[in-house]
Image (tube, rainbow, N blue to C red):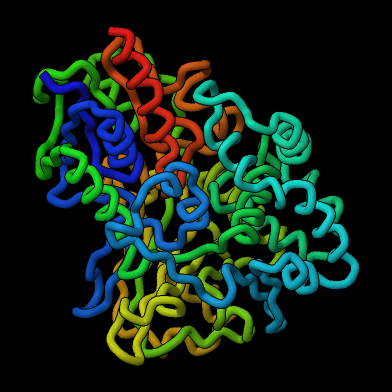
Length: 469
């Protein structure tokens, strides 16, 4: 009998399997698709030689993850590559605010009236970032806080809505940059703890940047898998699990799946019936005949570029997708240009480009024209650079990855109390009513992102249970 079986070979399932194997447990991992990776994969989606990331592409939480930093992933081929700027946010007038590794450069880009306010916002936390990241990414009761005072101070700043936090800024440049950071979780700007979301992304950039993985996000998954195999674990692909009886006997079963899928497979009935899924996304991967022709020079040097004219436009787009059930006319977009840091992703002189916008959960329309009209506002002539495009709306995303219910790439709405208390209100979110069944997906704390911490935290709960039996 195995000690543990893990279902789902996304970053969290792989991390959970590695953490258990590191501690001497026998582990087998099962993946429904014919390749591992989940939200961290790389494929030729458009033309030969153009390597795209179907889901996550830039990894501020990955390079800052306490779980990943404790593993020898570089030994297995993972290499982080950085653009000159982690992120830029261009404006219609051709200027841009930036999120730089340097707090001073970031503050200066926001304008003289808000530079001091930005410095004061990040200063109390930046020098304690590593401890703070471990503390909030390990919550709830998987580890005692190492610095409870800093964590409490962070909570006082971050738990109110982001719209409260941005009142300290006087000009629109700073408010817009911060609104874009918050919008990465696809939740309205006035939601609970959205201030913390924006602050985390800013601190992550100042601490270690927003890199891409050399060769594509698949490199993260491949490094985790190679380490797992060296530890004696096994990986089985093209193996769909419909019920627990489909799996070999084990002392524990760990699911990197959506809560609803887990309930169906493990016979948990209506245990997760109140779990909510959030807005979906409409994603386009481009093969380009050269760099994106951004009007703002800073955007040409950035790995990630946020697109939204001002905070009001961003807020309107988020409300349309998440509350009003309609696609935004002027979508807020997150774009990544991996070729700026990693030219190997495309043939010489060409580039890959990645973008998505928020749409209602399950939406079946085509947002290509609206997305490209937005791009043309900030990068005139963009369409002239397009060699090929691969589009994926909510149905296509859900078909590629069963965790993306309705196209929700966060595996659950990151709004209200569910931003922090997921998949249900519990001090033990990784456990289920079945004593041998656990969940480790992005539906558990600390939530969405390629960082492995949900898998790391769940593995702790599993090995504590295994040592008691």
